[in-house]
Structure formats: C-alpha cells, structure tokens
Image (tube, rainbow, N blue to C red; front, side):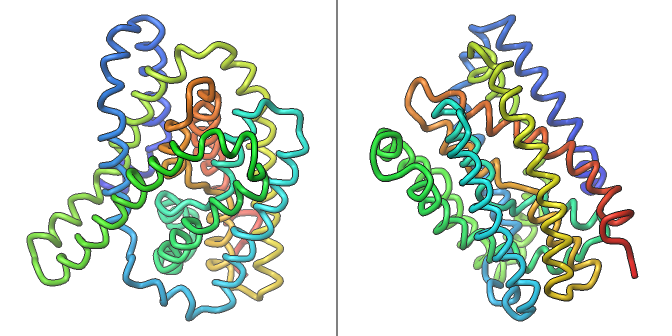
Length: 318
C-alpha cells in the first residue's frame, strides 16, 4: 500500500496544487485561514521525513568510495557550479533567481530513494547515501548562497528570516528525528512509531502544497510569466543530470544499478527542505516560493520519464 502511494504521488501532488489554486482564487478568505497551519505542517513533514533517514549510518556511504566520490562530485561541485554560474548570468528577477538557486543547488533525500527503487537502481546505496547528502547540504547551502549572491545587497536583506527558518524548521526537526531514532533502538513502541511515520511524507507534502498554492501562489500577480521563465531551466537541468549521471558512472566504473542511483540523485532536488527558507523571505519575494513549488512538480513529471528512459535507454543492464 505504501509503495502504491509513493508510485502515484505525482498525481496526488498535482491534485493538491489544483485544489489549493482553486481555493485561493475562489475562496480567498477560507484560503487565508489555512496559513496558520502551514508551519506546523512543514515541521511535521520534515520530522517525519528525517526519521526515515538512517542518520546514524553516515559512514556506510563512504565505504563505497567510488560511488561516494561520484555522488559528492556531481551533487556538490559540478552541478552547483554549472547551475549557479548559469542562473547568475541570466536576466532573471532577484526573487526568481533566488528561488532557482535554492531549489537546484542541493540534492534530495526522500523521494530520490523511491524513484531509485522504481527505476532499477540500488536502493541500498540510496538509503546509505542519504545521511551523507543531508549532512553536506546543511553546510553547503549557505556557502552556495554566499558564493552566488554575494555578502551584500540581496543576501543581507533576508539573512535573519533565513536563519530563523533554517534553525526552527530544519535543524529542530532533524535533532528531534535523531533523538527518535536513538530511542527506537531500545524501545519497540518507538520503533513502531518510526515505521508509522514512514507513511506521512507523501500525504503531508500534498497538504503543504495545497496550503502553499492557496495562500502564496494563487494571489500572486505574474505567476504565469515566472513559470514560463523557469520551465526551460528545470527541463534543461533534468537533461543535464541524466548526461552527467551517465558520464560519471562510466568515469568511476560504476555498475548499472549504481550509475542509475547516481543519476536519480542528480535529477532530484530537495525542494521540501528549502521551501521553509523560501516561505520565510520578506514581503515581495513570493516568486521564490512559486519557483520552488513549480520545480518540484516539473521534477516529479521528469522522474516519470526517468523511470522509463534511465534503465531502458540511458543505462541499461550489461
């Protein structure tokens, strides 16, 4: 049942977005009443997701040094340099530029595992890699923003809200998840709790998307123009991720399942982790929220294409 829910999650998210947009456009007063529940939903979503990441097994990913090196090189050096250099050079509005940078610079740690499994990758490697990916991005994201946005102007204007969102809605759920996992080793009831929390990310993310669409996206002017600006970027990113996954897989001599795992990691981004940061931005920066939400939708449809193309054509079995 849980696998079926994850397999069809794209359509659930799309339905949630459409319902949220409809609510925001036709019932703005009712939509506004939902805003107070957004932050608790996000906190619970991140807590439930982090409890599924084997945080105590960080060293497992490093044992397979070829895969770990390719994973880190692709996700934290090559893709950020390519994306950051391109986005900074493009004539985008500051809020749109920030949204693109936020959502494309760090790799996914949740549905990347699901799509790796469905796409005939190595789910064991994906699970072992998630603590490494999460730990590195918590350090790397502030460095990336400083590198591509600079220390003055745009970066300084929202430093406080970003710090509050990062500590309150990312670090706090992460610490709570780590404590839960430690308790689960000794208490069977907590272990059952962790297993039950594994059902939450998909419906909670759908609820978050509904509330965001109703309260943030629906009332924003010029949404269609923003989406048309970033759509080629997001589609091009997926194509680049597929080519880089193939190239690094061959360069490091990875097996087909390992190379597919690498490709799915490069193609999926951590939109739900950066969403609280985008939502905490000051008034006038709502376009960043739109960009983050839209990228997750484009990525999900892209993963449907990846499921056929990556194991079938790009990296078939030997």
